[in-house]
Amino acid sequence: MDRPVEEITDIVLRLTQGSPKVQEQTINTYFTTNASFTHPFCRTGSFEGSRLLIHAIFRWYKIMSPRVEAKVNGIAYDEANLVLYVSISQVFAIWFIPFHRSPVTLTTRLQLTHKPSATRLDTKKYYIQSQDDLYQVDQFVRFFAPWGVGDAVVYFWHFFATLFCVVLSVLFAPFTRLEERWAEGQAGRIEGVFMQGVEGIEERRMLGGTAAGGRRAADGIQEVADGVRDRLEQGEARTKDQLWSNDAKHDTREEHGSKQFGNMQVVT
Image (tube, rainbow, N blue to C red):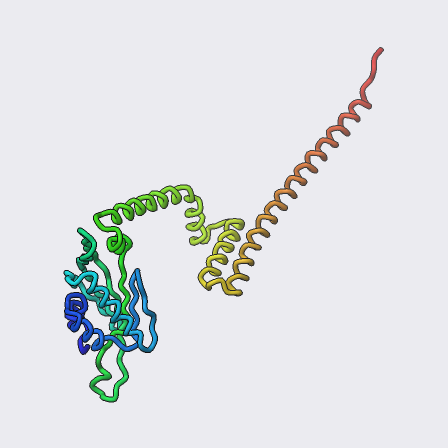
């Protein structure tokens, strides 16, 4: 490709609506020999000669549905990273399954590259290094659960998951308030060491369970335990001080009472 944004619509239509010969020529022209293809139901990986697998996938695509209705809805180009995003709508109907018809919408992510060549002109051309077909769940289930069955299952699951989020957000509202106090620097000591422990655990997840992340998480948990223990010890110390103070007052009252008893006169 010389101008990816202008040419990609024609390429998509050739791949989806062209004859088997046109489809084959399009793949050979615009895909690198080690190009990869990723779809919710299949992937090729990238290695020298992996383009042959892409040929096979698209051939089977045309065998299942010789006639495909396709439309490019929009194109976005990340020129700095050579990534092309293409929004596509298509109607896919498997001819040997009675009444099968799957209208779907997807976003195709195309990673472009410049192919090394002996001529200066060819080095300016863009080639497809990888194709990732991105479907929402309610879209790709239509391939194997048509007639609205897949949509109904997914919609029910989405509703249940949303309700689950709402309920848990209410139950864990105190944690949200704690997060806000921690972000504003207003958390108490115990709250602070607890949030440090949480951040340590999160950092371990972000680092993929590395040793450094594990140590940080362990340190955070230890700080939480130390903070709780210190608070308990302080509470115990205050309790002992209060008991000692009460005992001292009691002894003083007893001593004062005995003196009064000693000064009492008994009349018979």
